[in-house]
Length: 227
Image 1 (cartoon, rainbow, N blue to C red):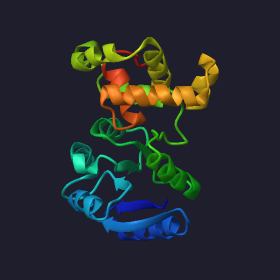
Image 2 (tube, rainbow, N blue to C red):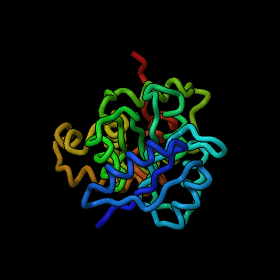
Image 3 (cartoon, helix red, strand yellow):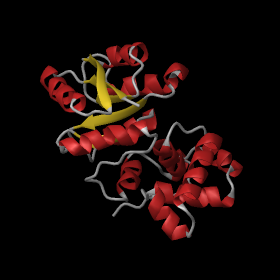
Image 4 (cartoon, one colour):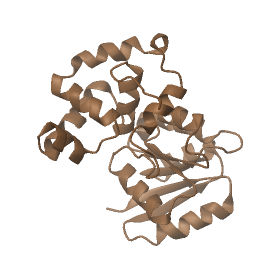
């Protein structure tokens, strides 16, 4: 199935470069271009986009606001947003994940990394920049305010619906581990891990794996460590 990609960036030159790259792949196509966040939200719905490559800094409605609008719209529940940012270690990354983005990627990434990001997001997985370490999201969330007084008690209460193994898997997901890595550590099959992840997402109302990470930290299940 062809992955339908929407490009949202206020720089026409960058959009053109991304279009050439994406359209060169047999399994994906660009279905629209937006120069601001409001247009991105509208086109995501009109063009039935699967993945939006969203620049976070745009005039008018910025990428962060647009991501929040897409995440809040039931009609766009299947749309995944990948934030494109110049600075990977940035408060914007925390805010974009909390707004509902499936992940982020630096604008200086290699073409293959960008294409992989689209495929990963379309598959419902959380995307961490290939340049990021496994503890990067923890540090982002620590910067974004995850002190005890800021933890969400409602989310902590919802964790009670998880089984012990689902909670165990969630902790590993929050650590940035892949299904294969979790499977090896817990001595189960990757398919079993995927089943636990999917069940946790359903119980916690998470759009994708990235949202599971946010919930794990904001509920207090996992404590961020800043090195």
